[in-house]
Amino acid sequence: MQFAIPHAPRRVRFTQVPGAVGRLLRTLALGLLFMGVLGAGASFVGRFFLKESAFLARAREVEGLVSHVTLPPLEKRLEAEATLEVLYSVDEVQHSVSGVRTSAEYAEGLGHGAKVKLLVDPEQPDRPREERFARERSGAINLLPWGLGLGALGAVALFLRELRRTIRAELEPLRLGALVWLTPEGPLPETRKEIIFPATYFRQDVKHSVRVRARPGRSPVRNGEKVLAAVVPREPDWARVIDEDLARTLGWIR
Image (cartoon, rainbow, N blue to C red):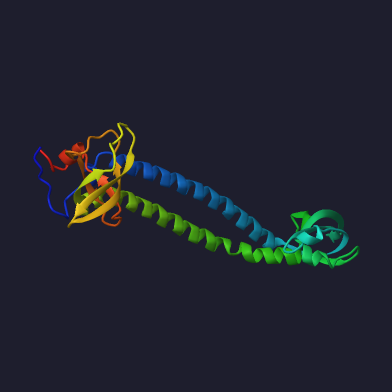
């Protein structure tokens, strides 16, 4: 076996690395699936925002009377919700509605016959909301578009980062990594799965310990008990085994 390994930086094309295109396609597929799930969630949140905005735009303030208050237990009232049963009139039609949500702190001060302001959509007069509680919630709802925008930017950035990381993980060790002869700490298992094993190597009379990744079902380039590997530049405690198929594809052995 004759070696012809060039010095770094070495010219290595992505398509020369066996399995790299498949791994990139899998990353793309997972990324697109992730983006699709986020898109579906954003669509749902967007519809909710539009619905809430439309309600606030149409709603009229109506005065109601409290007929019953349902409070949570005393020890659970901090930042909790209560419900009201209210009587009110819209266009001279009387309504009695229960389950109107409000804050427990506010509801503690309400009794039978207390007056409350309600927001009522004329198109759905039987679904009132307690005015203070609805206004407070609208402030958070108005932040939804900003949250969606930041979430979309974050998702795109994460997607591009994963693509870049996949490409760099395949090419950087081969282009820039230091090629060393590793001594595995034990015999390599006979398996067709990707394996990770501990090994050591000497460089400038200094012993280094690394974790090594070997592709499944490939014969590493050997020198007795040692195997050829590229040390990952950005992660010096990691190395990648150079197998014979890859070395021949790159023209490093003949």
